[in-house]
Amino acid sequence: MHLAAHFPGVNNTTVWTDPRAGSQIDFASFEHLARTAERGRFDFFFLAEGLRLREHKGRIHDLDVLGRPESITVLNALAAVTDRLGLAATVNTTFNEPYELARRLATLDHLSAGRAAWNVVTTSDAFTGENFRRGGYLDHADRYTRAAEFVATARELWDSWTAGGVPRPVTHHGPHFRVRGAFTLPRSPQGHPVIIQAGDSAAGRDFAAATADIVFTGWGSGGRPPGKCSTRHSTLAAGQEFYADVKGRLAAHGRTADSLKIMPGVTFVLGDTAADAQERAATIRRQQVSPQNALLALEQVWGVDLSGYDPDGPLPDIDPDPESQLAQGRVRLADPKALADRWRALSEAKGLSIRETVIETTGRQSFVGTPAAVAEEMTAYVAARAADGFILVPHLTPGGLDDFVDRVVPLLQERGVLRTEYAGTTLRSHLGLPDPVRPVGKD
Image (cartoon, rainbow, N blue to C red):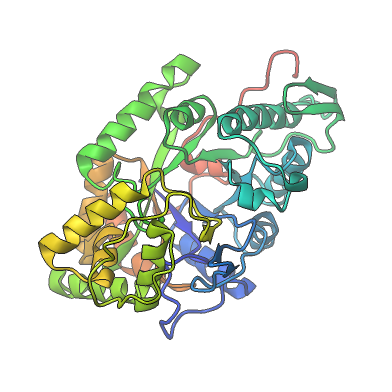
């Protein structure tokens, strides 16, 4: 089983009101979670990206804690305080250039002795685009064509030095990028940093099959915007379907099933008994969905100001505004009225208030139980080929992984499904991924 740790920094999954919650910016927070993950013999530490502060009703949205440092800078610092843990940065292909980013990632791979990874993301969000490209942004259809050319160009640069350490000139002339000149760094310890990808559309799955080493998938609805709840891993059967579909696309690109790992992002709650864990899970959900957050979630669906509604009262009977600009920086819903109708039907059928409906529909913990039950269930998902491992998303910053590493990791190790020591030094060796083959003529 492969495991990774997602730093729970800026989102409404994190419980900021917990007295144990710390800073999402202080380096000590990053160091604590990374050291804990390495103590648990995890494969890698994962950082998300935020390129613009989200807005709501024309104001900076401050219900999430604001501010997120640049990820590669943080990971370069973590390389100095960890020894084996992989270091994964989320970096956008829409708002960067391949030569510069390839250089930064290769630098991280050199400084960490082969532990760098790149989570490749795209965006068609015009709101975020206002910080880049003189106000322009990419059409939705161009996102993956630019991403594919971006990754291919980065790989050309990473492969451009000979095995003897001689730089060779690179000339790339494509629809999105033009690069001409020798790369500034020799091939890094892993050859290429590990590539992570998270798309779920048909185009995203094909892109992953052609390009990625890891697919980071959703699980249930935790941490996702209302209405964008993925269900592909909320059941064993759904996970198996996704796993088989993506792995089945690899052969068309000359790849084997072992060359790509599928790792859903999951949450967990532990308790001394099953009832204790369920009670704790319910408490955490109510902390995550405060009355204020419940109305915010509803406004993201309806697209109108609902501040006059009682969070403990019924859902609005008015229809959503499909053209609303109320929330900026979040994924837009394809059909807000259909989602509103489903929420109203659920609320009426179960007698749920606004807050109870949001709790019921927008998130749940993936694994809830005693440490033994959680270890057993996680093992079962991997054994049944619904996943190769998991990216754990704790609800506390920075100590949310402590209990898992202290209480669940030893049980996974006793079962023989999780390493007790690192066998290699690079992230590729942890994941069992082959080293990239240097193209013919570049040796």
